[in-house]
Amino acid sequence: MIRRITENAAVSLNLGETPWPPKFPGGLEYSSPARGTWNIVHVGMLLPEAHLIFVCAEACLRGVVLTAAEMGAMDRFSMINIHENDITSGGMETLIIDGVGDILSRLEKKPRAVLLYTSCVHHFIGCDLPLVYKTLRENHPEVDIINCYMNPIMRKSGLTPDQLMRKQLYAGLKAAEHDPKKLIFVGNDFPTPEGELRELIGFAGFSVSEIQDFSDYDGYLSMGKAPAAIIFNEAAKPAGNELKRRLGIETIYLPYSWDYAEIRAGYEKLAGYLGVHVPDYSSLEAECEAAAARALRLIGDTPVAIDYTLTYKPVGLAYFLASRGFNVKRIYGDGYSKEEQASYEKLSEIRPDIELWPTVNVMMRKTDRAETDYLALGQKAAYFLGTDRFVNIVENDGLYGFGGIIRLMALMEDAYKTPKDTKKLVQIKGWGCGGCL
Image (tube, rainbow, N blue to C red; front, side, top):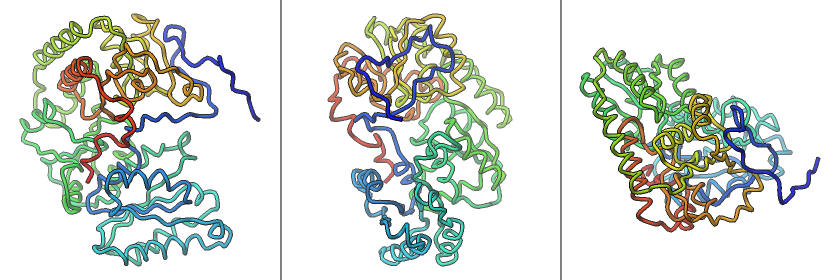
């Protein structure tokens, strides 16, 4: 059914009038030019000594090819083009098997692993993917063949592409004798910075590593020696479940949060595993309050907008700021984690006037982008508002715990004082992904 799109269709919701969970109408979607969030190519490139191979039609390849090219990583990227006759001939399995073999034979150095991305067309035509992967692993036993997916039809059912990619990133890990004093961070795009979390782990006599620490595949494989994985990102929970199933690695889930009590509860859980007493973090809480007060003195009543590209918990961040006097006016996001419900309800009590805006609703293409007085936390908010004062980070960028709060307050001060070239910056794909290479 074709539905007319009207000029005055409602786009935003009022927080105080919208019960949890807030939902925007579905339909035709819009993709803004703010492209800093990571995609399946950026995440896949975190795997050292791996080669990425995408099997799909040329039109679908355009985006991932450009991603690899913009990263300067075409030497780690290959593609197998699908044409109409490949679909109708019944030879799709042979195309993939022979194509991967041909690519591997042409590479100067054989990779330790191949991330093989099949696409939605393979599911539509009933391609025998288990046979494909079985044959490839038999033909190339010296290479870890890891099944990955570029499958937009799975965005709203089952595991999302983001969850699936984070899970498969660790599919190359193998069973190993566990080192009881070793931990790993799993599921983060950016390295975990120094701070109270790493200090607690070190104080207990444990070591911790993550995929960003390694430039070689053997280093990556050493992560399999850890008996427990620390996960911050909710989208990485399936990765933890799979590591538990395959390798017996326990998950310690310490969710990203802007709430002191939740942060402390996470550290108490971790301290219990480590066998130590949780430190007194009251001084760090005081530092957070001092940093927020300092930022507020500078920013004053400047309207603030937050979007989901900056943090996985935009509602929690909005509550943290609003409850300390910041003039939060808008939150941009198309869906919210169940973990945000308590923050949503508390925020609706103190600031029911806050506006909720989508980012993919087709009417967002008609925003006038003239709200230049705003301070934006996130690229999409900056783009839709047209402001040049914004905090330019994506995917939480390591903002964990009390240290993360203190760092964000400093970034807000800097963004307020130092305008940026918004148009230029938001067009860079996978912001900060230079560390992948």
